[in-house]
Image 1 (cartoon, rainbow, N blue to C red):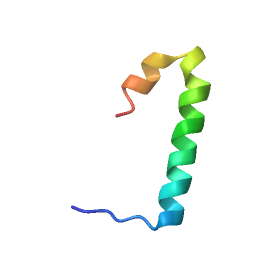
Image 2: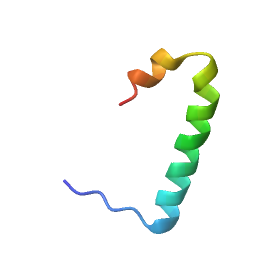
Image 3: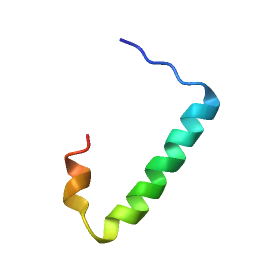
Image 4: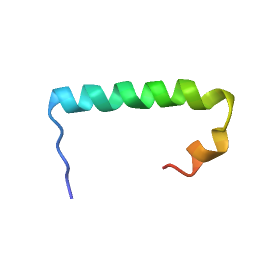
Amino acid sequence: MDFSFTPEQDRLRQEVRDFLQKEVKEDCRVDFLFDR
């Protein structure tokens, strides 16, 4: 199945991921591993 995002949605998604990675890096990296 192919999910297509509009450029705006894709950009927002990327921002959220970047933000989460920054926040999560310090405390609980383990949670991030199970996220994929």
